[in-house]
Length: 248
Length: 312
Ligand SMILES: Nc1ncnc2c1ncn2[C@@H]1O[C@H](COP(=O)(O)OP(=O)(O)O)[C@@H](O)[C@H]1O
Ligand SMILES: [Mg+2]
Image 1: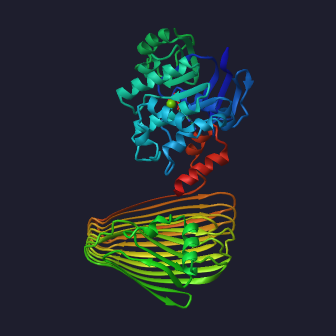
Image 2: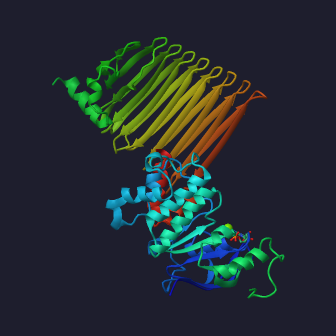
Image 3: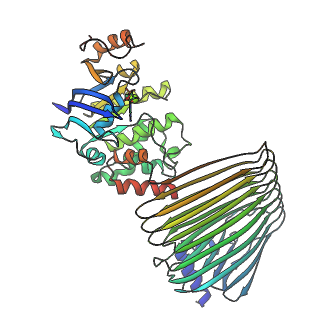
């Protein structure tokens, strides 16, 4: 069953239609990739699912476990079990990594807050004694900040996670750690949507949606999308849009 | 227990100072209640001379040449009454190559109608370093007026860092006026953090003159206003010598009916000097807010966490 079902979703921003009748199902417990070149509309689609500011005036339906969530606020969606990891996460002056990472831990698990927070950092190779009381500010490198973003998501432990360009700004070693973390999340039953234009990330997915010019042009096993994407989208072989949908 | 002892106890408790500093001969302290010195302990090289005046204290502080005071000095200026005036006039000299850190607690936990007026002249000698952290603890009535004024001179290679924090209790009315003159290779850092609520009124005026070559200066303010509070932040930084470098950074958060104005003035009078400034006023950053909301925090909790961070 689809944990997320998108039906006929369209979004117009500043007079330009960015999402064009997108429909897709994200299956419970699987790793999905939303793949496409820059500007395809991937981040926009994820933003509408999270309900971010400026991305709420959609037509069509966003269903979470069968329930329409179009009108829910960001935090209501999050409390249902959806979260989003930004491509370039925000910096927080003066907010400790401990407070940031533990912010999303559910009220029922407050007693284990410290253990959960430390464990999340350790999973990403960050030593708690070194990081817990630093601030989530400019003194962190881009890679460290990305890891802390993921740590905060692990600590929150929601059933559905979207990660926007998880490999951007991180080194190879960190990418391996992230891949391990993603595999572990899957083993625990978490559903993941990886938003990417990179083959390295696409290879982590079971299923993939190929997006181009605001449309989903193909849905298939990732192993089938990979060769197509590699051949036709790197570099992009057409100006805007293939002539026909169903390119595979 | 005599009354000075009991006032010292209650002042330190209200200020969050642990009692063990009093037993430690290596930790200097000065406790002033209204216009009386209730406790004073020096350390070698540090000369503290208080003189009682009507409604206050004249204070001469001198740190002798080449003296490094290892432990922070605790100072407490307070009034455990509901009403009154406290004037503190400080004349501070930090002589060449000496270094000291002062933690000042300004404690007025039950203030209903109190004025705390502080006037300081501070001279920091060559290669000397002075760090002054001023933490205010006010009551919840808002009936307090705090007026700290300071003129600071930094000789060459001197360092001065000040952190002003008014985060606990109502601000009431505060009117800060600091002006610093910076010699060659000196370093100035002035930080002010204020959390204003209800009908609090905040005025912050900070001026830095980077007059010497290679002088560096940063003026930073973080003010959060809520309810019907208002704040005016005036930060002026002037660079008038080669390689003088400065930065003005104002981040003021407004909620409810709060009003903030920030006036950063940066002036450069030398082609080899450089100053930058950044200011952001208004609601909390929307990406920060949405990040926390995407972890399930409601808007209010997310906003609180962001503001707490800025004011930390
Ligand atoms: N607020 C906006 N107003 C107008 N166009 C936008 C806005 N946000 C994004 N776009 C456009 O939507 C398209 C898709 O952007 P995005 O979703 O960020 O792509 P991707 O994540 O696939 O690289 C781009 O052409 C982008 O310029
Ligand atoms: Mg994107």
